[in-house]
Image 1 (cartoon, rainbow, N blue to C red):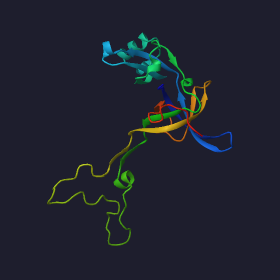
Image 2: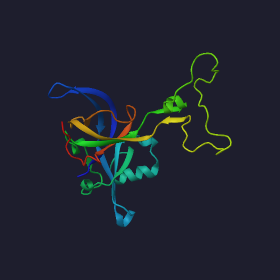
Image 3: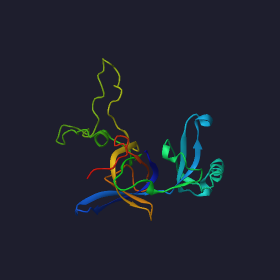
Image 4: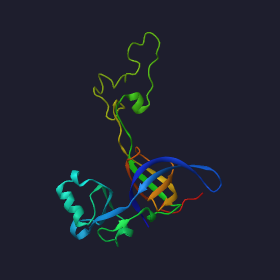
Length: 217
């Protein structure tokens, strides 16, 4: 059965498995997550469970949002997402979901936004090559170069790799293994790297391709 939880990236570290091998892991603060609203097909046009995670100051929360959180009897939350999940359908509004929804060995997908690098050139953004650094090249060592022919088609080809905003894109890393569940601190240790900077928010859910089954090895 599909599962999911909102989480905050704490950083990377390493642990040792039962055979003494080093396992690189990413620690995430997974929950507690609270049910804010249950959407139904009759009223909203689709079935979903809306959840909130990580406290937010009431001072910076808009009044309509305050009413929404008050109706669910929870404090304002920074991250809100909807889950189309069967196993959360029985939960009531205001119910708490913790990291123990996952167990050791589960295969998960982790989605988040990558680090934003700002405006970057084609070399950094697309790994293009520069010109030679010897004499005769001119001050164009890191320039883009030709962007198309003049006569035909007389335009810049759509999708051409050029300079622009680099990073801050939604990325999902699939089929990662949960190696430890710390219910005391609501922390999951997930094998490998996940998207985003330390302190960034991510969504941990059952693997789409792995079917949410236990990982091997």
